[in-house]
Length: 206
Image 1: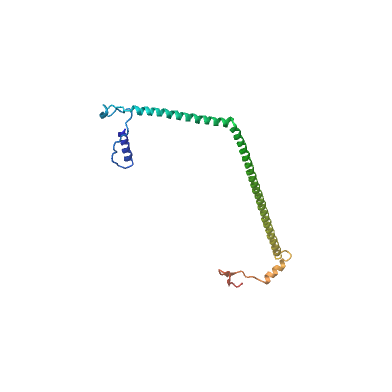
Image 2: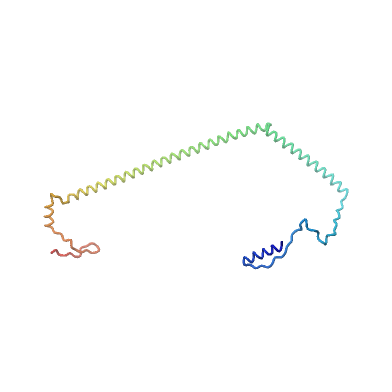
């Protein structure tokens, strides 16, 4: 056994890259099947001498001790059985049942009060959630109405602008007048501008 453990330890250390000194053999207590040592093979145990008077006193005191302990055990057992009987079928059973009934009634009342409190909190929370939802819906409707009004105003402005622009359109009725006005006021669009948009050079119309 020692050789196997020693070889296993060496193998583990060698696999980890560590070299250690060999372990010293150790031995624990002898097992029950091991023979006695050769130095104690001929030894015979001599019984210890006992004083007869002391042995008599010890036996008497031991018998007294066992009698007292047995009496106490019997008294405790009787008291325990009496208490169990009273709890199961005696007056204590009625008192215990009455106490359990009172405790059950108290716990049920406390449970009802707690349920009532939680119901009030739940109703208040649901009411606040309903009010918040209604307020959000109203806000959404107001924002939609404002967007709709802004959209209508923009469309009205576009229509007014188009109506103003229509006045400058060339139609069959004013085409002659517009041609005469263009000939009387010629425009030269052949010019150059700088980065700021100013006209820096204009060609003379031929």
